[in-house]
Length: 247
View 1 (cartoon, rainbow, N blue to C red):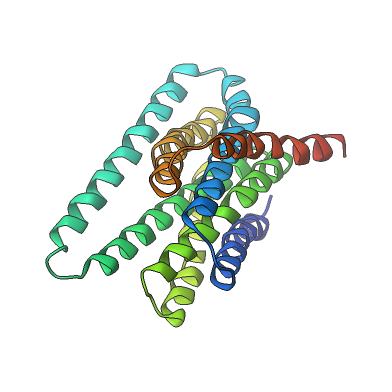
View 2 (view 1 turned 135 degrees about the horizontal axis):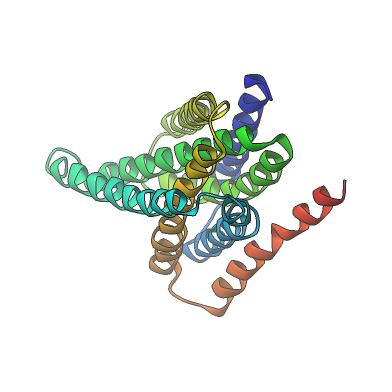
């Protein structure tokens, strides 16, 4: 696989997020709609992890390095989240509450897109067929995330120019993560490639449960529809997997 193909995968992932942000800018949303979108995205991410990534990881011969990589990924996600909280707390007195909250959300989105980039790079180092199946899930999951994030930025009164500049800048973390990881892993051993994938699983577990679902509940309360959309998101990934696996 060439670097251009990896760049193409990263660009498609960014496009999925950007289309979501564009739709979020054009349409009027609500806390209940955002909560449903976040539950869909959480279900999609967990589906990609359990249906596609974890079976590939468990097929590896060196299980212990993969276990520690997954654990390290989860701890890294917790550490980044805590660091953002501390940073935002220090800036609280210098910025108004809305601006502080918007930059915190944006920082979390950057971390999420960078995680997607690592996943794309690692998946591409394994095989193109595997990478395609992973990227499809990431794109479908990033679309509702982009929608919700743009809705939040609108609520916080950010100008349209600033909102779109922030959205367009997200091409950088996913591209850097994808190309950097692919460069490291493409000629490495199977253990190294799968360790990168295990690391991202740890990142996604925290993102899906603690960020998306928790944020969804804080915005729209808890409802049966949220639970249903979580299941819908999980099942929706099985459709492209079934179609692409047969081709």
